[in-house]
Image 1 (cartoon, one colour):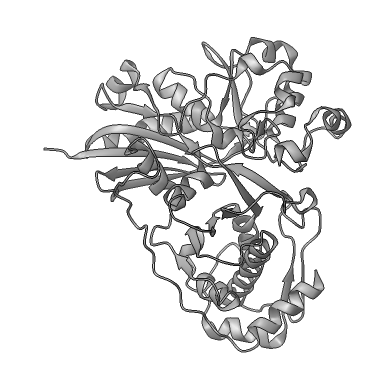
Image 2 (image 1 turned 30 degrees about the vertical axis):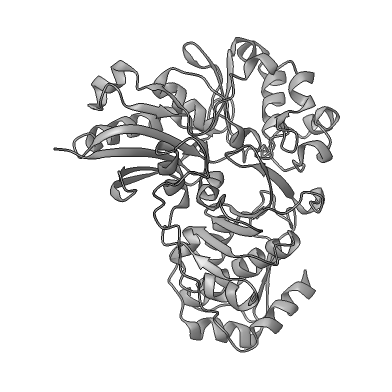
Length: 459
């Protein structure tokens, strides 16, 4: 007899993943596919139909392995879908698309003040409000047909269940659409006449309804399989850290590295440093800072990265090779500045990996310091948990704080599984796989602290 299981649909900016998790949160199966952008048509957009077809095929295979009781969508932020009863009225825009510069001034007059939205002005389409304002202006006929504006996780939940919903974590992710401290829509939504386009709010863990009957028949999944509302990916990583007393920080790592300072006030946030307040799954504001760490690591490490040794790290520190921000164009505290390497250039794939590691540790440390996250534990989630040197190097720079490296390389998957097994409130007891990661021992390389001071002085 098949055991009960949950399917997590995890759409990151780089890859799409489907994971099948058992009743204890263990992984039974996992499949990945590239998240390619379509560059023709009205504008660069996500290939939602390719994702849909791949997802249904993979779900059909998963249905043979377990009795699936729930599907949970988790996606990257800064993305929304405009739909009517028949589907998309416009393609789902890629947030890295450079919107027309002539729109920037007009949008600047529309967007709410940073003091109310805690949403910094970002390049390209990273402010979702700007995307929507441009689509409304550039494609008025299609926009007028829209019956709902759906955040990206809820778009997939809607396609699976037929039920439209809004949810706070994606709305509160540097969109200009939300006021995190007041937990309500911003002035932009009313000013643009969009209030009626956002469906009723639902908690991230709310079952929206059963999988559509035709999809159940197509995939072989149970007719009563529930579709969960879903969540923004970095907030999925935060879920298991919302309990506890005192301040603590989480580094959610992937294409973006997001430093979240749980329990810290918002009054220290600065727009010019790309600091922001996200909303967690309970609707509470969380002070955050981020940089495009996965993309930057890839730029520095190269197309065929090879894990470095401690000796490679020490050699770069000794010779004074520095990577100075930034190596991605999409936001971050040094957005708009061209990255450069000073000192002797790395000569091997291992040295390039070492330089990428040193850079991403220093950027993470910089973000944590800017957030005043100087006390309490730090938990590293996501792709950087696969780097054997990241957490030890960070621990050496922050000896007063325990740096815990999660044993789950995908905190988003674990958080999504938790939503499907939610018991009314985050404070309730529940199985939490990997919630007690061990603290990393500091990697005390010679001159590491002085290397950080030289890096900071060069910024």
